[in-house]
Figure 1 (cartoon, rainbow, N blue to C red):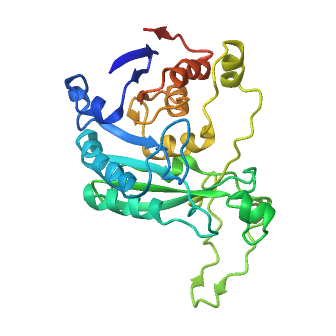
Figure 2: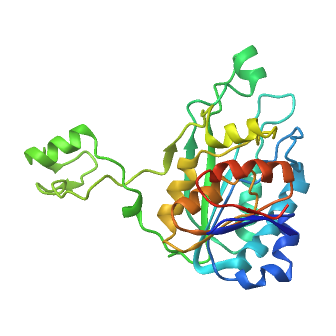
Length: 301
């Protein structure tokens, strides 16, 4: 493990996460990480360039990370893991590997499942192509799960930091103060003033819609200008921004164990959070510098 580059708020390490978290260099971060936010290689039935295990080997590898992550997590810190779907080879049947892996991770770390989120990507291409495009017996698979876990049932969190803009109808209600109060079919009785308080936004749901369709971002331009390969599984910045704002405060420490193009580190930097990322692939690390166009980067390679 070695430092690849530094910014005012963070460090990108080149290395394998198991070795990094087992090294003495990382000891100083134990019980001080406020958010582990990451998207590990998915348990796909076909090999990808960024590396991915398969079957029971994946479940065992992934669950073993739980105790390592737990050592570094602050008492009220959170872990948020995005896990995509996979399908059985040669059949229009979804694999349960992702769910089994997350459940075993949860049990191995004795974590609490605070909430489950869905990232809906409306721009995702139709897949799996054989069953969606050719045989037309399935619909487009356009979402992934994000599991929010912690050591305690009450981790640091504040949904007032991630409020969304009121709808036109809600803004009208706040202005007119007119609402059809009374009992609903559920027998819940809504008072006359229940919705008249202006909270500066609506509480978001656990379904997050965000596309990843940028074609000329600073990151992409940097990679093109420097002849670097784009990471094939980049996360939208809005996704990282939501969880970093929701679950951390300024100067908190955010860790991404599978850094890739380092979206997590870049967003954390922009939000005045400290960050650490780990990634074995030097090409992906080199390209990730493009996410720090307006930030001084000290390269060590």
